[in-house]
Length: 190
Image (cartoon, rainbow, N blue to C red; front, side, top):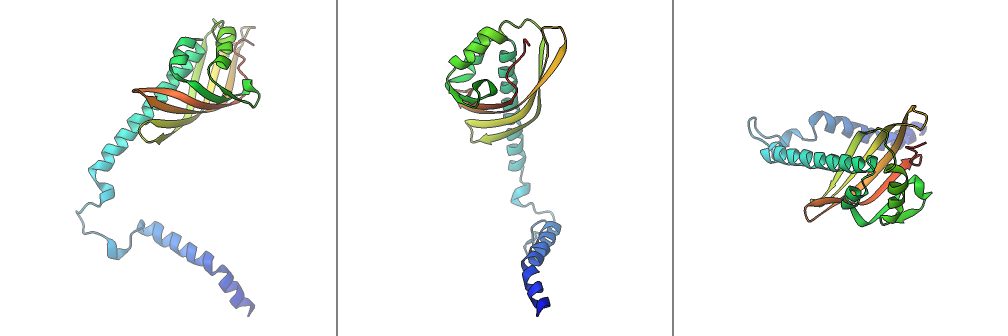
């Protein structure tokens, strides 16, 4: 009796294991549904290749506009930054101390008092960008941002933040509508 209980207790696991191996080895196709050699299935059509290329190009476009946004931040270029942000942009960032900020006034303070006064070189790298395309007019990018800079003592420093940004395309141009940045507050001049 105990053996029978054990057998039936593990039966769902054994079935799942069997299906996993069967499906993974057959590519999800049973022998009865295989097409004759030389006949393409829909997943192998040329449309898939075109769609994949279009997706790749659109993802590269999101990386490029993100790099342009970060360059505007690094250069203290508030005018360029505002052109790339929705006027009602929302954000969670360390400087906001856990609060959701809305609009550009909060960010203006840092441009006027921190980034625009920095005359030392700043180098930023985006690591491991991951992009979610959300239809034709929206995208989300998540990445690690490494910022290298020279502090007030002339010493090279590196800061890291984890960021995600939501882009929305309006009238053919991409704008940030929301972002979240984790890590230490901006300290380029420290």
